[in-house]
Image (cartoon, rainbow, N blue to C red; front, side, top):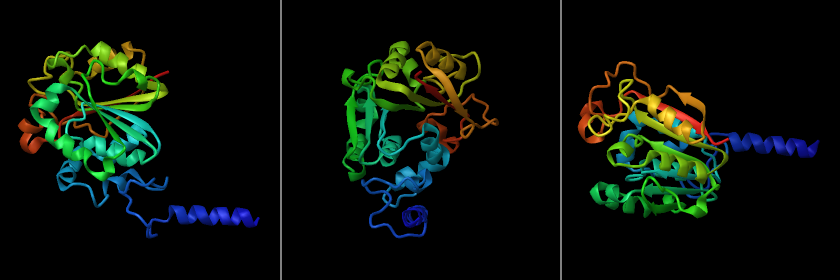
Length: 260
């Protein structure tokens, strides 16, 4: 009985939101299971530039949708400057690992400097940089080791970049453990447009993504309406540089596929 009471007391203390931790929630020490995704997003050491993007990106919902937990090994396709990468790194903690992939054209055009700066931050010490192309995003030694792979608003780019998307999806399938998830968010184009508006409007037909990913052997497990906007006319450029005040308001689909 005494042991049971001690255990119950520990659980209450562990879940108490008013306790004062000895280290910040954003530190690279393992986060308690009771710390929510929103608490990670609210960490005081996050960059102000990242915070300004949060309203349109719903980062806590993304972490919850992916199902990221401490100790996981997660890959990200086309990490860019690392906004999502850092959130994943905070979520997996020091016992986990994040593999941030960037193709050469992205690094050369805009991402090299912000990516270097991102990786220099202590909170990202569990991130491994992968300079690889999208049709072979992970090295062979990672096959069968990843718990999740995230594609955050970049699947449409694979079209105008000339990526072999069948090879890309097959490579993700190989990298994941059985039961691992492949989460894809992107701005939706009008039905029937396929990937033809990937460069002009930075959008993609949701059905095309569903068909291509399932052709690689994945099963659709879940979808989320968090990023939906039924008022989006889907006829304007949703890229960060062109969207202006509409940035973050495009209708976006969120799909979670699982490797059987």
